[in-house]
Image 1 (tube, rainbow, N blue to C red):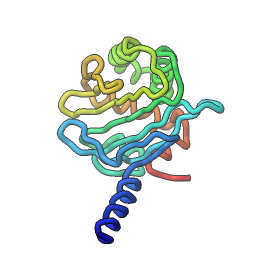
Image 2 (image 1 turned 180 degrees about the horizontal axis):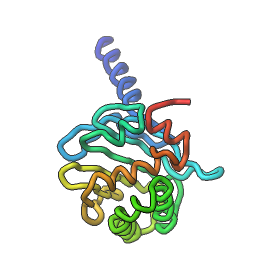
Image 3 (image 1 turned 120 degrees about the vertical axis):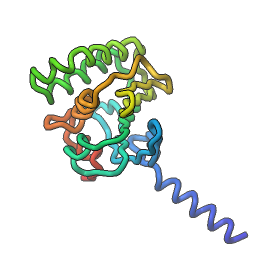
Image 4 (image 1 turned 135 degrees about the horizontal axis):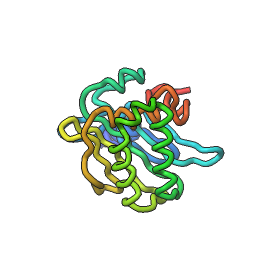
Length: 190
């Protein structure tokens, strides 16, 4: 009986250590995107002034602390976002668009324009994101970028790994939306 109890306690501690927690949001240490299993690379908190906006995690086929390597990595990927406050859909879309624009030249933006509009329109059509809303932005090499909101796929997958990389650059680019969030997503703790 003692061995069973000890094993149960050890399993409990292992499971607690296996999940990453940010601002009360738990992110699993592993997830599946398409046919591949991904591991949490890092997780962090998006803040704007004094407000906690969202907790997020980045999932990759294997861990990497280098932004360029993450952007170049092959295989599935997931950006997992959990909102910590109510936002308007327009605020959410404008923040994403601004993050993309800050990390790309005019020529690059021209090549992303149609897909960014389609992605933005899909986000707007998904409705007002409230506290607790879960957003997955997945890269599936076979089909493209997939948006899932609260467990429901929204819109069509968008082809081109350049588009998914453009979204990743919001958080991992040369002008990330928040420097300490970039470091957290790369698995670096301060």
